[in-house]
Length: 388
Length: 133
Image 1 (cartoon, rainbow over the protein chains, first blue to last red):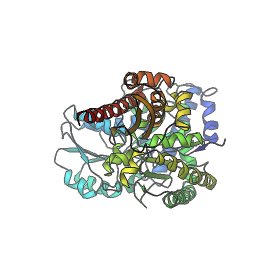
Image 2 (tube, rainbow over the protein chains, first blue to last red; image 1 turned 45 degrees about the vertical axis):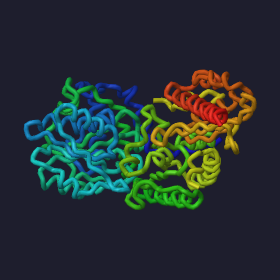
Image 3 (spheres, chains in turn purple, orange; image 1 turned 180 degrees about the vertical axis):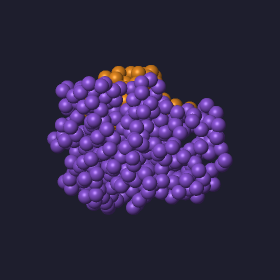
């Protein structure tokens, strides 16, 4: 059976070109980038080249890029780094109720340690209102953190406007760009951000590597203490192959992003249209137009997400759900609840995220099998009867 | 975390793919409605009783693979059983009959046991009323 992978927001396959670029740094050029001999210099050169590539794609200077172990570390660093560096100035952080756990859980952690956190609501499409951000700012506010685009529903936030507000107020502004880098344009000056988190494995790079952009002059307390790597801002021997992989992935994304986004948006719209036509009592979650080119998120009434996923998996289709049943916590997606969805609709959500290897035939295959799956599950659903 | 359903046994998948006894019973002798939309599992279990023996059982379930499989299994297990025997069916017995459930899914078997208990209590309640009148 042909496997159709439609979960690119979770992770992407590492491109062969990226693997090829990484390979020498495991073996021949294995040196420590801090060493003085030629092996080390070779590694150092490769790390700096990757740094330049990342900086170029986001319109930053290379010294403003700090490599990390991934998006989660980058988010942790941004939030804790600013929080502990700005304690004298204030203790208030503004974020949203739909952030990734790598931001939300850090905020909760800081909240238990004397920081005051404002979690802004979103509208039914998942959009944060810049005015809400403005109103939430106090003289104690040290950081605003709003994601560039949401990983579950794909809504692209008005980061530029929020950046303007943050700058006028003199408050640091962080954005989690893990879902957007390499998929839509990301420019730190246009977005007016001071900090920006990225991850390699969401753009066909390897897992376990990412970066934090830190605008020059931004005061941060390091998360990792130890050696003098990354100008003492992030201790630990550099993950040279990973960093090289990130650099190559970013380079390829920069070259292909525009065309690919257009192709994916076409497939996305075809899938959305087809699902809404072929299945009744179904709704699109997230914004109809301000959304990631590869994201489709729907709620199917009267049926539960995991049972749909299992059936899709039996047909070789990989997708994801915001249903509690797919997690150990047994709570439905915090994002869908924040959008105002009742619990049963959150449980009935399905997310398809398209990627490079997907074709129109893949979309057609989903449209071919999902209506039957839904009909079968609805036939055994006690919720449908009560609606009649 | 690994896929929770990668841990599903073949038996669970078999019942999930071909659930037994789906539907409702017209004029049932007992109905058990348990769960809620917040936790994501709702089960409805119907029983038909003749001379103290459960002669038919059907279910309708909104929930994950484990919820559907346990519903299917519990209806299979109670058919032909005396009420007193059926009351002794535990959630563990349902899970064991399915060759086990992943730990995070054990609550689904609890729900199946609860649905059965509520359906039997419903039946016994009706019996009591009949005797009184």
